[in-house]
Image 1 (cartoon, rainbow, N blue to C red):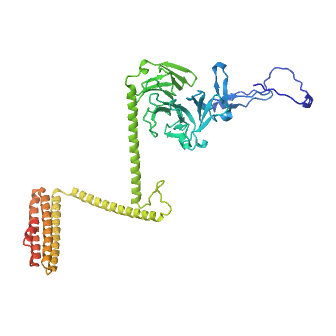
Image 2: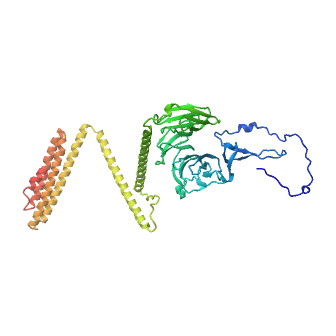
Image 3: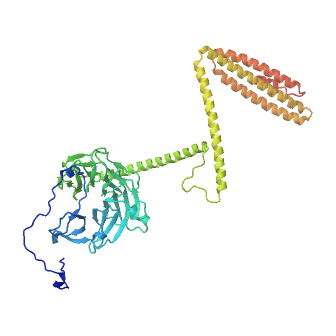
Length: 540
């Protein structure tokens, strides 16, 4: 566009006329490079490239200022090297636009772009003055520009025209819905992604549910059903990954470029832990890889601007008869495995939370309320009662735990003492413990007989009914004594021969004591059961 200035004032109003003379151009200022500043220069790799623009100035001024600007445009090669349409800077991205993708539309004139300013803009080539739609990559799902994250990569599937994915600088992968009615619906899901920027995203051409992402030092395969972890991934490498693409003819094959100038070809049907083939393409780092529709040719671009085209062998371009079914089963199996691991991790987190709450209750600490579990207003008294009850339960648990620890320490002490005894001392100790047990049992039975005698004496004048009830009680007790005696006899069968004599003697002494106790009790009653003494004697 030519700009013409029309002067409406007279020449006399401008003052004295200037006298110009033609002369050769002269250098008014010469600023040589400073070697000291060159030593302080910091090399950055990669760098952000911009367009340098300078205004025409008078020769009497030193041209030292430069303006770094950037213009987005649409080029038509039929009309030359100049752009056919341009978007104004004030309505464009605030940072460089890293990727542009044409979208499936009726007119065929629409596309969208992503930038590190956190915006995704939709454009129509018929109206490039402003974007037709704006979406912010806000992981908080509030559609706020201040919370949005920048994007390096875009992924768009024509069969799903309203959905797309963006790989961000922070390593997250955001799945968006352009036609979402609310801000929360526009950001459908957020995947954990990588530890660094995501440089490439692409859905598998055979299974659109699964997609490939490239970032940090690895490539990862994701399922839309799993947002926390990938289903498959490549091992970390010393050199960073820069780009990746699926093969259009084989579902298990993808390509990946690295900063060391190598192109890696991964075939998951053949190998899962290392690439099937690694090719050193350039001494410079590789930043881009693309595959033609037949899958026969692969083009890679290096940092120095050199594009290299490689031709693949038939082994990488010919799919096996059942390869698609095998790869689909592999992806589904890995998805199911990750779901099981995720469920198990959730269960462990719940158990850990319950254990922490139990420990807090045992320590007498107040209950810890999670989000949404705090009592409502008006229930303060109930909450206090519940807290007191939990504290009391915690004290009880602590007391039981202390008693249990004391018993365990006592048992450990006795066990350690027995280990220090010799065999003879141990045998004597066993005999002593056995006799003490017999004496204690005998004293217990004597007390029971005395109690029985007192009850019979008190009920002596109560009539026949009282006597019959007393007889039934005595028969029940005699039966219980007989069962106790039988159990003691069974337990003593496994003792050694030396202990059998001791047990027999103890049994005889116990029988005599029980018989004496039973006889004393029988003398106090005129109508004692005639079989009681015999039963008690057998029980002893």
